[in-house]
Image 1: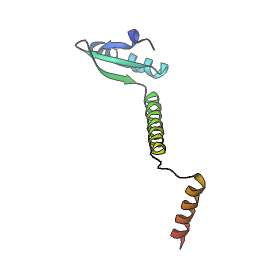
Image 2 (image 1 turned 45 degrees about the horizontal axis):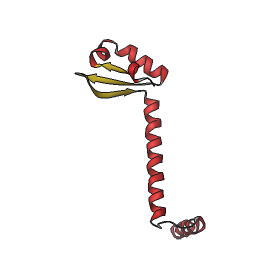
Image 3 (image 1 turned 90 degrees about the vertical axis):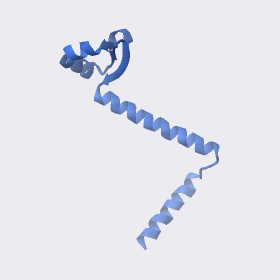
Image 4 (image 1 turned 90 degrees about the horizontal axis):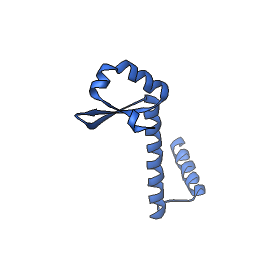
Length: 93
């Protein structure tokens, strides 16, 4: 993405809102809106936003997993499934 094209003033947003929304939706781009020359908000296609949020969630899970492994807080997969089966059996009874 070229930020030079993606940075617009709030005045531009007000004057061209429907055009901006159409462009963002069609091109899956992100736009930075400025107020008094300072970046204030980001306007983004909802699907791009959702994908970003899902990616961040996965990265958070990976980071937590790495931290747990380095702390020794893990168990072999066989033991994990065995524990799950025990819990299921306990709930059935």
